[in-house]
Each structure stands twice: as C-alpha cells, then as structure tokens.
Length: 365
Image (cartoon, rainbow, N blue to C red):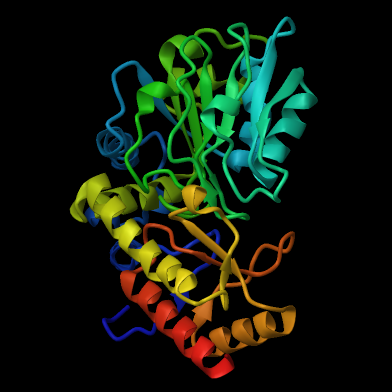
C-alpha cells in the first residue's frame, strides 16, 4: 500500500474505518510477523509471539481508559448481541429484577434477550419522540434491590449519546459501549461491567471487549455453560479456547495508534472537531438539513439527519456516492442520512462531507 492509494470517505456504521497507518503496519507484517517466518494468524495462541500481542492489547486498554485496579479485561466473541444474553445469564438471579434504560433499537434487543432469562423492567425510556433524546438522570427509576441497571451509551441508529451516567451506588451499572468506547474519557469506576464490539472504534469485527469489576464477577451464577461464564475467561486470561487472534492483533495496533495520537484526550478533541464540522453545517442550513437528535443528546460518533423530502434525500445520497462518500444512508429502520465518524475517520473526510453538504444545499435551495 503506497502513499498515493485512493481511500474512500468511509462513514460506515460498522464495520467501520480503520486508521491507514494501522492497515499499512498490518500489511507490512502480514507474511512475516517479527521475523518469525509466519503470519500472526498462523501463530499458536499458546505461543510466546502471540501472548505478547494479547497482553499488550490488555495493557493498552487499561492505560488508555485509566481502568482502576480491581477490574478484568476480557476478549470474547459473539459481539454485543451475545452479551445481551450473557449479562442476564450471569447476573440476573431468580429473586431479583434488572432495569433497562431504553434509548434505541439496541437497548430494546438487550431487554428482549434478558426477558427470556429472568425478570426485567423498563427503568426509563426515550421512545416517545422516536428516541431523539436520552432520559434525564432523575427520570431513571429503580430500587436498591435491582440486580443491575443496563444502559446503551451511544445509539448508532438515532444518533444520541449519554454525556453523563447515573451514580447507581450499590446497584451495578452495566453499559453497552460498542459504538463509542474509547471516543472520550469515561470514569470506568462507575461501572460494574462494560462491553463493546470492537468493529466501530477499536478494531475489526470479531472481538468483543469486556471490562468487569472483580467483586461483581464473584457474584456471577456458576451453573451456566462454561463458554457463557465470564469467570471462564477471567481465569484463563481469555485463552480458555482459541481467541480471534488476528482481530486482537489488529486491536493492539489500533490502540498503539491511539496512544501515538495523544491518547484518549487527543482522540476526544479531534472527535469534537470532526462532529462540529457536520453539526454546524446542519444548524446553519436554515432547515435544509434537520438533525434527529436533540442538542443535549447529540452523538459524537453518529450524526443523523434528514432532508426536506425523500426525493431530495435520494438525490443527496446518490450524488454523495458518486463523489466517493460511503455509508451515508440512514439505518433501514429510520431512513434519512447518517455519518458515522468514529475515531479512525479522518478529519479531512468530515471536512469533505461538510463541503459537499454546503454545495448540495446551494444547488438545491
């Protein structure tokens, strides 16, 4: 891959853009990893060459997220969708109920899976208004005996994001952070468990990161299938069976890239700048572009917006595709437009989208 390679403006919602520097590094090492004469994909997950990669990925996650002592970092498979089941299988006992805050399709799916395994309730919902906001913290209702409270930190389909999390005290707080993990600083100590599919911000598809507090892990039920118990992975450094080794290797490269880019604060600053380019264009368009999310709930990762009518949207998306923009269609459930501007989406791509939006408005007003 040379420096003149043509790259699309990739706004896919996931799998999403990866840093060009990471792709080049992986390309250079693909056939011969560290002079071993083998690709990392060919190394045994029990061997030293891979073990170094595996442990370094864990170290970098702990460093970048400032994960406190007393937490385990696990690498699982099955995506966030499997976590929808694993969480209640491990932490929803027969004599308790779990609370779910409904902020979009993925929280609905998490609730539906948990409902199959135990008693659950809606602690708060933003469904009225088609999920254009995040419930206020004072609107979240649960009691001290709640098994856990589950939130979805960023809602890719609707373009909303939590900017402050509830202080649940003794009630364990669990978050699906699949689409905004490592996009901004968070206080990990607020959470008993965080899970995230890697394919939006921290690597290719196939790896699921779980960050779990050890004292919470000790409360997990012990009678579930071996491969669906968090303890299985915690006891074996996520090496109980063969992990997705290439995905973890790629994740390590992405985490190294993030560190070199200024760590989480540097990434967060750039994410704010990228989002401002597009949101400011929407806000200054006098209604030509209409954002879906309320101002206080806007996502840094997924900018969702509509145009005046479906024909104009269709024209906008067709011409955007011709101009080299990929992935701007809104989710099939809501339509419209969506720009997913995850960590690896370059500032230049967001600037190009801003310029295209301005030009399109000028030509069609």
